Image 1 (cartoon, one colour):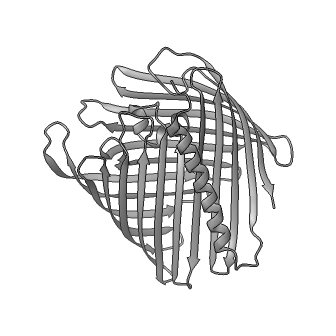
Image 2 (tube, helix red, strand yellow):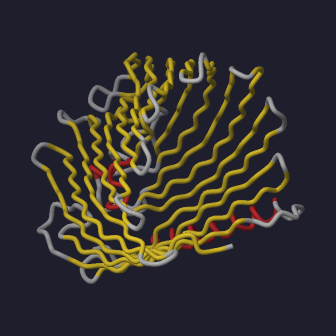
Image 3 (cartoon, one colour):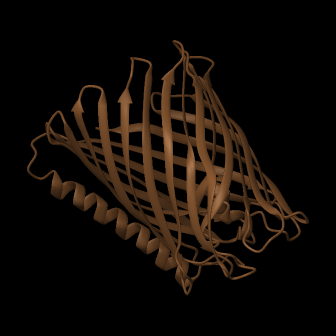
Length: 390
């Protein structure tokens, strides 16, 4: 059912080629610099056990897997004004039965140039290849078709101008493509967006601003869908360890109703908020959002999400971490809402200078309709090599 296919081989080769091109670009850009780059490598090897790792509605069958993941990271200061940052990841996962093997990973290259004290320009290019169990709550698409692998490519550019010490004007634009090579339900989606923003620091603790953006997306053999939004933003530090931010506003969407086939334009509330508590050794952040996201379900999908991430260092050697994430969206042409949920708890213990052991337990659930629920437990234990390099 999940055997290695030509598409999967092609995707794996594409991932490897993009990673090589990103590394080559980093070295070309830094060729005229005498500064030595900072290169680090993380290597994780893990054993996983799950009763339903792809959250299918078929009869559950417990299976094991082994995985090897390498994550190179290169930081290079080309000159006093320009720096580049490359992060890569290449993973190979082999299941003991039923599901076969997979190649996953990502490639991310960022370039930042500070022209002067007033103007900063940056660019970013990335490619990702994800499995449902790794990225369940990042998109409502996985509630529809958990068998799929998601490939995403993105290119972005931004400019920030500071006419004075308290004001920043930003502009950015980007292109994105989502592809689901193994799915019969999700379509390849392309989207572009652009936006402008103005931020003003009113005090050491409070920054306010206004932001406008437009996103247009298109799936194969379908009309464009688009959303324009105008938001007021605020970021504030409340106390020594407490800080947070919020943005609220209105979005105007244009799309075709899948039932009536009528072209619709509507205005709706959108917004997001986060609140964090970070004393020494502890980090806890709560976040929530209601906004339109690029999706393989029809170009744009209005989604509600909420999440909580906690990390606490209990000793010099050990850290406990826990995450809970939930996402909900109304599917086109459906009466109910699709939902995805992931909760996990893990422990990381340093057993050597750069060597860690990390057990982790996660619970995943997806609901496409009221009568279509699938869930899974995933237990993993890994041996992690962190921070090795020059």
